[in-house]
Amino acid sequence: MTTCISDTSNYAAKEPFFRIIREGPEGFADGEDYFDLLADDVMFEHVISVPGYPRRVKGRPAIIDLYSDYDKHMTVRSADHLRVYRDLAASVVVLEYEVHGESAQTGRPYNNHFVSAVTVKNGNVTKWRDCLDPVAVFDSSGWP
Image (cartoon, rainbow, N blue to C red; front, side):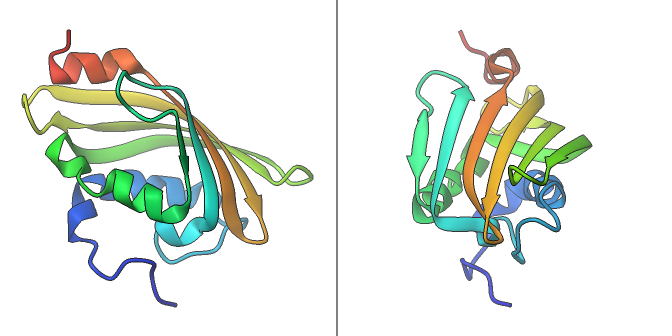
């Protein structure tokens, strides 16, 4: 299987994140890497996020672009405590997980908790609803 993007070097800072969230929909969604799991017209909704981050992002190319410079902001060292809840009839997987690292700009620690509701159709993620702890981002970035 080939991946959606040939050069993944821009995404190294998120690899622990990509790894843990590939585990959650395993068996529902098919793909060699994180982006392969996504349908071409996937819809991301950031329900709880931070100022300036897009609330909605549509399409796999837009998601790839959104994450392309993540390493300028955060370095993710690990991701853990994955909990998975599956509703086979609704084709929904709910993921709870934690991400740890530091801000690339301040060097401050970054420890965040996420809840993601993922809808899968025909082996691809069609909708991703994400909630995170914005205070963890603020603390890491030194804002406000």
